Length: 494
Ligand code: BG6
Image (cartoon, rainbow, N blue to C red; front, side):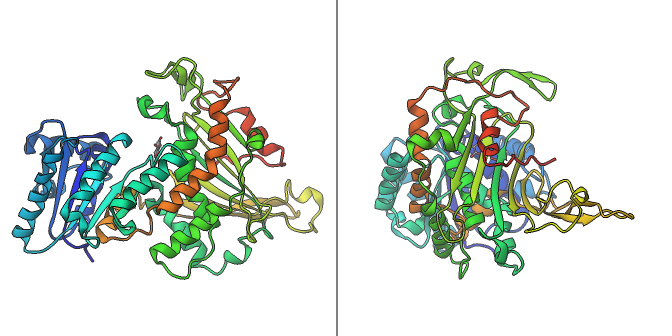
């Protein structure tokens, strides 16, 4: 069922996010017949564009970044009939009247009262003033049909996130506010819920009695990609751990929801964040490791170090890698470590979650039968592979009792072209008004609270060993030591 008639205003309409992600996602939704019968997409920006030039610019984005490139039986033309551009200075209060006029014109044309969605794909410092102006527009008073979408970063720390929440919730009802964490829109991330709660097989062993530890890796092979302006003031902990990684952790660790209601799911997830054991400042060095990449070689190509990147301070202490050990203090997870890590310019792009089960209680086989008892492992690959593997021991065919770990794999093989991108799922949810996969105010703040002691400690102490890892590696040695001292090793997927 298609969502109701919608007008999408994209602030930052001439920006990179719209070019690479939003318009290509909307185009794919259009091809898949998920867009409403009546819809209008309006880019808002300061850059001067004629409608025609704007469409040409976005078409280029589709050709470069959409999972289905370019023309599909005349659909490009049809899609762009719905796309317009409004040159507007977001700082000029009077110009917001043009938004209201646009909506009124569409209402008259369509003969119905459509959804009005404001997507703020702008620099974080512009969010408060735009939200403020929108909040005073009469058309935002309709809680059922007006929505505001906020991109990350949501605040810079707990205090600023709290302030932003206070501002937004003062202007809009919580159900109107859609805070994006694009990881939640990924097919494989959503599938964690299906795996855990649509099967009776896994849940009985999904706890401290059977699970030894959990690892979450979000390794990227790209480096800074010209984003110094943002990243220098962010770093891996803010950029990836506060949001994407903690959200993955919530999916893995949450209790079973009793319904698929947005607030029910989010309640269960926020419970996990609230149960994460606070890391004391004096213990940060025991539980967290930061890293920064040096110059070196990446897949045969020479790359510069982080500190040599354009607009990066020569003594920058911004981390491009972070690893943290968390505990979740509740009945299910007491004593089970969660090791998480993320980094840029690492050996390969790979995001995966590994559930390492405990050893078999006794081993009746001759000791030479197997190299390790530690065989039971469930791995959920989020990207680029999209699969679920269960590793267990099996007898090697032959006359001797020799055991080998084998993998049973489910994958979404060949479905790449049909697998919606995260932004497609999330944009569709916004049009439908379904906030399940979006961050509620308390979730965002709870996540900041978790990382604040690490952030504050790192900010006050200059790292002595930066840069401390090579491009094309798996991160700093200290991160290996962090997990090795508990008798484990990071699991890198082939
Ligand atoms: C973004 C971060 O939120 O996620 C980027 O700001 C990062 O630094 C990106 O590269 C990773 O997303 P994905 O979908 O490519 O894993």
